[in-house]
Image 1 (tube, helix red, strand yellow):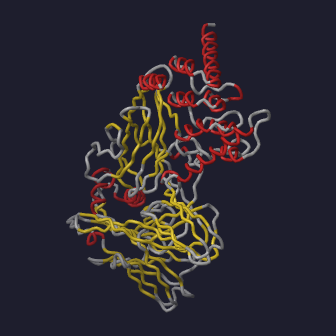
Image 2 (image 1 turned 135 degrees about the horizontal axis):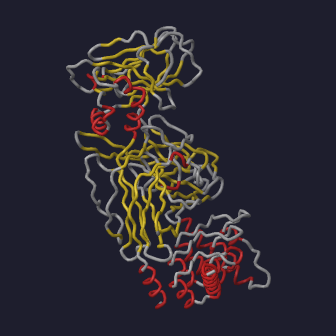
Image 3 (image 1 turned 30 degrees about the horizontal axis):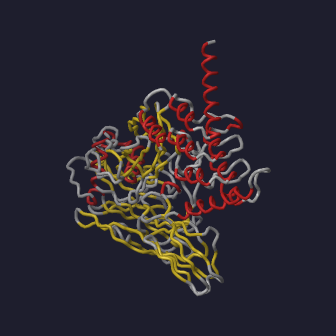
Length: 603
């Protein structure tokens, strides 16, 4: 009976907060929040106190609610956010403050209407001051336009053509591409807000840019020249070289430059052909006369396997102790998967011990391994392959179709060496694609509710230590242990313990994510709050999500792709494949709220 009475009292206080917010009663709103009343309580039509304050145009109340942890993207029974309400009633001040807290102008309600749609509408609730509401909506539309153009570079071009130039790209519009004066824009996109489909060995090497307005088309091709960086290794140092890549387009979209391992493309005539890799000349593919009936386009790609990678994985995993050395991984593909080879094709790779310059006095076994393109399953083809020829420098073997190959040498007396190829090469292949990464949690010195989660690549020999902070006003935090992520891997951020998110960033699903790119900043701003009743103590839990495959355009040696933004919904990536990477300790003192309310009241 006592529990029922306590719940009823709580509901009464929450309803009181909802009413006080609606009439702009700052004193009672502050008092009730300090008593621990739920600021996200849903009252009439499932609206929250923030909805109520937005409808009434009470800026001060909205500010106090947001500081206390009110969710800026909370939705009522019809899917409307507080920004929908502010736009409906033309309350400019509230709209401006909601935007500062990350309110989205493109959030849709159940009827598909956005706050921007409402602000552009001429229909106002019957019996209210139509002129005031329409004037307010006009100013709100200006706010929305300013938010959308933040960080955007704008250029007007006419029938005579023109050029838009930024640090990331140069857009050249030729004469006659447009028939009237047209405004074009360029904006750098946060890498966390777009899915880039990277395959093994590929890297994002440029900013991600969005050219607009969306849907703009041209009568003639427009040149988009992207700036990108590449690494040049010299001795023990690595220099970053700036380059440019151009592509012709007839409409605007989202663009990025992706580096991929170099490929050698060539045509095999019916009379036979021998092709060596331009990056590893010891790798050759020999086509005998009559192996193809028609001229066929073939691609060779070589992935180097550093000796230090084998040494390191052996030190970390006893299962690899029998692995002595490997050749490079060689991938050979044809443009037409239906092509049949009428005679065996010979693949030559450097002998693993010669390739890694490893001497071994004991008995060894040499094994030829194959992995079908698009899979991770390696198969031992040593016993099923005839004409394996071995010299001190090379290994040659015949194949009847194209695939991926690697030749390994294992110690003959190592117990269980028969399992090294089929079972562990999959893990070695993954190891080569991953990078050592650390996470760090930063909290504002003057407001512990404001946080940043940062992810960056670290050197293999770097100890765990706090890196120099690049975010002014944030206090030092201890980084995580090293974890391994592949290029383009998404990491989902979740809060556990007596803490919760109060602002969700740009994800429509409410689950913030970081995408790891080794040459681009990886950072997510969060607003967190302590749950009702005590100090907020808990963890920022980081979960690795599985790889996403999406088609994209490509260019030789580099890829400049038109990418698509995706809505990231719960469960979309497959929960069963998620993996907990690390937990960072977080503390949000309850006194952070109290000091905020005190300062707000004084104002």
